[in-house]
Image (cartoon, rainbow, N blue to C red):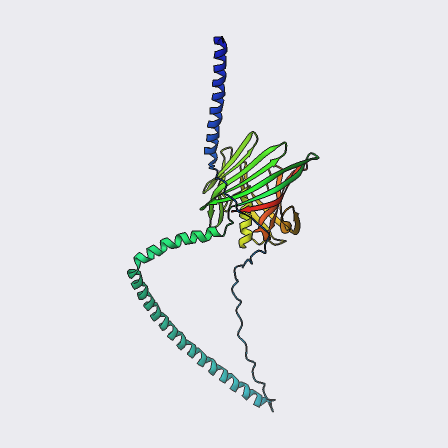
Length: 370
């Protein structure tokens, strides 16, 4: 028979294990509530993206320069037979010029008065017509306005890429030893809500995940919650309308257009694809980044146009972005990026530098879309 003492010990062990499980579950739920995350379900990807000639980006047309009026050269004067004759001719020409100017001014005044009268009459007629139309079609206007709003939203969302997953081959070095693994950047959109998720899996070291969630707006992505997960540690930041809440509870003013470490990849791709920022060697692009410990402005120099040999997509032309040192660094992590116009301006290479001891190099292997 089993002794009562052993039964009590076994029951106690079960209770302790159950207590730990419940505690871990509660902590996980509380962390989800704090960070504001509600992870989207991954979609079914149906096609592989291949390099293609990018569409022509039409910049905003500048106003045409005013064309100066052509000046009519005066007729050549006959040689004067004497000083007196020359003086008489000059006086006659001056009188004729003044007379012509006075006639021109009078004609312009009459024309201006006629145009003002016509404009006033036209304005009265248009006002009467508009009032009549508004009175007759007020219900129709309300209906068309309700239809126009979804159409405008659909047009806005159509400018963003469809659900996309980029898979990378990872290599690198840590304290003179090689690193290997793989990584993924996944972009999802559900209506005007979005999620960007970066998973980096390094052999021996495990997986680190960066997740950004927020809204798609006319000005760009508006992150609301950002989270960093790695074995044994979880960090997050929340982004409100006016402030950014850091991991330690400290609040900072929210800069206009602020992004986070994960959302910046898709935001920059969209800026380049729409011409909001020009992807050209010699130019710069700046973006505010909110992270669990700080909010900083990062400026990237577009330093080169390079040809990258990828494993499955062949040789791809990409523009190399290199960050400048920030004003108040709190670590030695920096990221260089390569964006490819022929692949919807997506980041085909990401190189993370961790001081002089380590670096990670992510090179795109394939790109899937829904």
